[in-house]
View 1 (cartoon, rainbow, N blue to C red):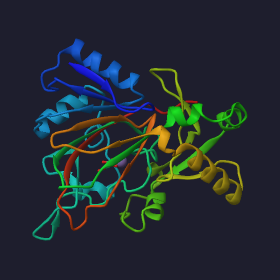
View 2: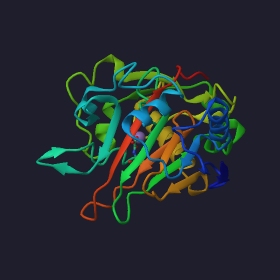
View 3: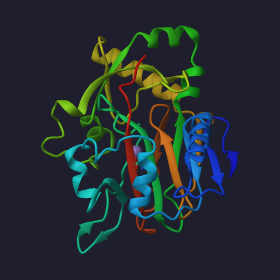
View 4: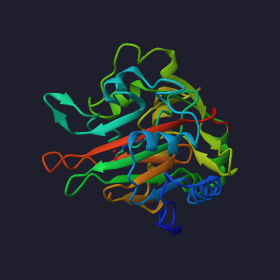
Length: 285
Ligand code: OGA
Ligand code: MN
């Protein structure tokens, strides 16, 4: 297999590998390349049935939809018969949405509102519009490392509340909260700076999609500090923009990467992707 770095901040592209056929040594090499690339791997030209996508994903760890359920409002978008597969799509057939439309159209880290948030998300492109529908990725390692030592030291002592209800406010009404989404399990506290358990590298762990406020601060202080952090963290030089090709499989590490769907293809074409999501350990400072 051939590995090529994609942007200085993060990402590697892998060609010449079929994820349905990698042995344990091959998987270890992929995982090492993934961590080495700051937690983003682009695997080209993968033909995956839902079963094959799930089988490869389980090698990273237990899955949402299998070992533990996601929030109630995603249930209509799970692939019938395969609750570990979450469908992201603007397609509607006979009035029935074929996936969640406008999913993740804001900066976020998947499922950060759970005590055990997402680790790897594996997103597979099945149908793409003729243009548009790119996805942006931002390295939260690079973002943290670029802060001054004084601000890093302040942030290392802080915790933030993450709450699924924030998505409703940050996505202009596109996220529909269901009964059961707002109970205790979709709201939790995480350190603002986490240490990656496998690499030891620190990362900023707040995101505009799901972070509600900084613990112990007034509402105004929290809002001002978070806005400053987002402005400092979400910079072009910390990013990679993925222009999708059919059959791409992207694997990102939600402990070190934020992402943002660019929804610019409405009226241009149909987009249909399958996502699986593995469950992380509780993030630690
Ligand atoms: C996701 C997500 C981005 C996209 O599936 O978690 O945020 O571009 N999707 O579809
Ligand atoms: Mn997402």
